[in-house]
Length: 82
Image (cartoon, rainbow, N blue to C red; front, top):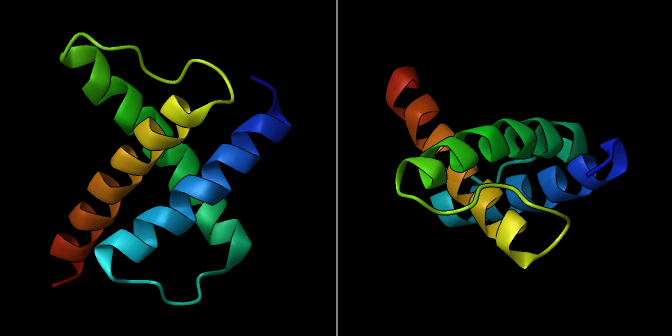
């Protein structure tokens, strides 16, 4: 997946995760992309631990994995900020 694909998956995953966590504050497109891309790495790592594929291509599975990782990332950040 190219840079544009990572940016699109990151933006979608960051936006979805902020809605799921309830922190849909306006961190902007760049913030969503950063959270989503970092979340993609975290989600891919977690999924491989459980024996599933991580981020494969630009598809629904990759968006779900990245969203899972972004939710984990936002949860950890919320715990640290308290």
